[in-house]
Image (cartoon, rainbow, N blue to C red; front, side, top):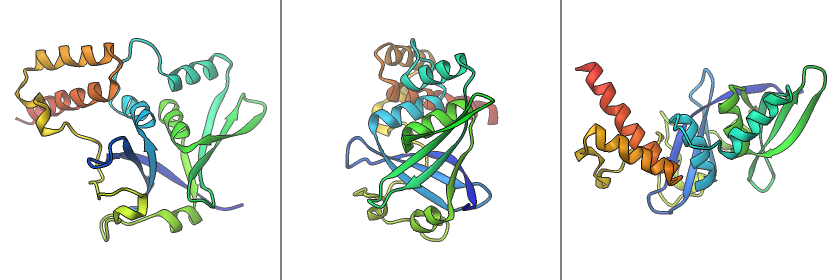
Length: 206
């Protein structure tokens, strides 16, 4: 059996040139090796909502699945990230009801969205890390390594300077975030929340 290496989600990058193109950045626990997984806007939105703890009026798809699993006493034990021969990442979901275990095939983005909601560990193999991994401190990956036309910084998306949030009061931002959530524009809500948290952190440090 191949040795498993645990991964943690360090953030989501977005491409300012190619609209709707995002990359999940996973890092090996205890190491600086990282792997990027290309995803689309809906998948990025589902994950970013959880990362930013954006409260939605109704459960999102992955929240509903987590609630359903819990109702039937089923636990997501772990997620195992794999890479197919065509270069596409996929995942195995290991479920258990306390007696039996089952492995379910999944898209990598859905698997990670579930894992961060259940606190389940994410693993991969040495082969995947060797083939797709990079060391950001030594040599940031070129855009072609993960099919982006630009080389984004390896951080979560931040509020764009031209949005105007920096000139708004906290009260205005709070109202704008509530409106964004009501309109199910969760990406915008996450950005506004990030700005509010940035201000709160700055106040604590001052």
